[in-house]
Amino acid sequence: MRVKSAILSVLGLASPATCVILYYHGVPAKDRLKFAQQMDEMVRSSTPIACDNRGSLAPGKHYSAVTFDDGILSAVENAVPELVARKIPATIFVVANLVGARPDWATFGPQHDALDRVVSIDQLSKLPSDLITIGSHTLSHPWLPSLSESEARAELFGSRDKLAHLLQRNITLFSFPYGAMNERLLQLCRDAGYERVFTIIPRLALLDAQEFMTGRIAVNPTDWPIEFKLKLLGGYQWLPAVFKLKAKLLPRSPSPSYNALGV
Image (cartoon, rainbow, N blue to C red; front, top):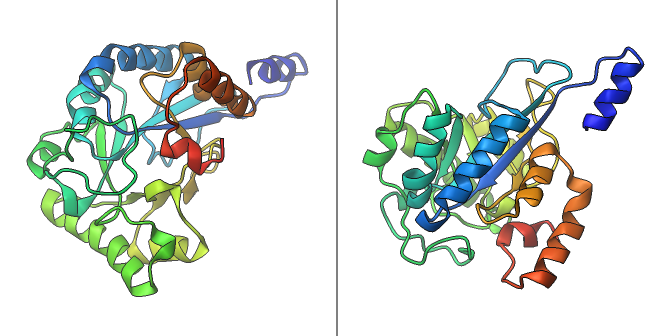
């Protein structure tokens, strides 16, 4: 993107704004320093913004945003203090029926501590509202496309209503569990009153201030520095090769997010 911007500048043309939204799950205590280093890189290489931003992005600038799926306690304990220290806004998507409980969905992923929990309502209420936004992640974290119309409606409407009641704030953002979505579910999200929904499609985000469906890129605190920077800068065309190389050099179980993208 920087090469493209330089070429456009030489030609006297303004390069368009770009934005990447990152998404994490848990941030274990042992990986807090690595997460902090990633946030330092984020501040150096981009302008952090909130993912519910409705303003126009300035031409020629690269923006980024941070989100966390599932509402895992380790993210609140280890990531939020690092975000606050750098004044980086973020959104935490919470499974409404599991607040304060042990996650019980089938695909939990290797990035989580086996003893981790979903954050409690009291802990959510104490987060700095000027930096941390709370979004919905359904009532129970199901595979939404497999549900009937009434079941999907209950998950989408019910989670928004429950979080709004418990936190006494409007809930306008939604993230699809496992990134699983279709046109029917998008319409239900609109009907439920969400103003923006988030997928795990790795594409540039917020290029339209009124964008409803927004893409994100999966990241982990354990990503290699060059891997993280490529993700942050939007170098998606390199990601499949990077994942394959990393798997060969450091074999490990792939995360559900990568599997969902087929890489």
